[in-house]
Length: 158
Image (tube, rainbow, N blue to C red; front, side, top):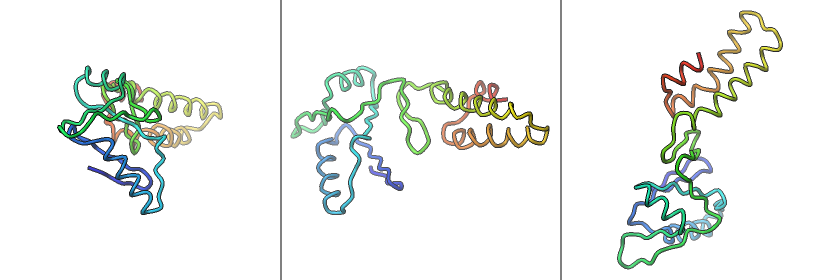
């Protein structure tokens, strides 16, 4: 399954798919279309048991579950996302074993910095209202839509 959005491409491979086949297809497509993939931005997010994540991250080999395929080494310039590390995809953060704090922590810090910056100019009550809409609402609305917001995060922001 492949999805394209502007200049981003997302590919989902099953255990029966070959990373090598994907690389060949993308290389051919780039030659024909004149496009160029930024392969240094390639991220691999592993799905499955934690033991599978560890073995793939350590050995960097994918073994498609098809008898005719040999294991394929994941190129060294391809980043494999570790557990507890979120990968950003269209503004959403995805990955294995990620918690709301991992996703929301940097966003909350940025909101606090913005509010602190605006508090130094001594805004009026109307100004404070606009600042809250702009900073808290503006920096959290899309993120809440794509990631959800736990009660703990909501309480932190209010």
